[in-house]
Length: 320
Ligand code: CUA
Image (cartoon, rainbow, N blue to C red; front, side):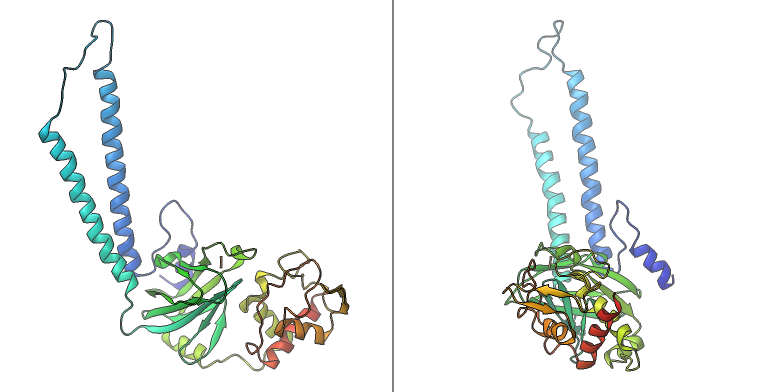
């Protein structure tokens, strides 16, 4: 299968579990299907037997006492206790083993730090490189994610790897996975964390080891024109979660026609959205909040280079 076929598999929705991207995910599915099909089986046995008995032992005027007085049946009671006991012990043993496997990263795993905040995911790689909204990992290599939150409780969810764990402030939690095929996989936040929760998404990009190395060495092209660089940052730095570029209102003001617009701040002061105002709003968002909006934006101080700041501002200028 090539990566395009994988992508189409990953994004095909149906009633069954989504595409399993790792051996651990497949093992989880075996257990899930075991429980599912046994549940169907017992549902059928119980319901069909009940329906049969309804008719067989129906109270009629011809047959007012269809059953004799029965107090118990030792063999039957042992059977319906021991068979379920065996089944739930199998499920317990199997489930606990898989739980331990999903919770115990292999020793050779690459460690990547994940930080959740309203409303984006940020990833820090072993060499210190950071990326937002996109997690890049090599294929066929265990990856351990060490996660924490800067504000409220979020939850990191990788459906294709059957991994989901709460991301808490002041504490680390861990998940790991080993992707078998390269391609793009969806990351969700699955703990309601405020206005932008449904937009708190990221893409897991599984690439070859060479591409991962190239990504780490930060081949971020120095020749990208500023507005294009800004457009990329808009998508990868989490801006798009709260700011639209088509005029629709969202958590924050739209960027369409933003440059040069006048706005009233919360403190009653009027400002014009010029270069300085935009730059200030990115590095110190709480400083100049426009009326009608909440001070919910995280600061980008120290997270964007000067060139990147310029790129974003130039990009906003193009959105007339
Ligand atoms: Cu973060 Cu929902």
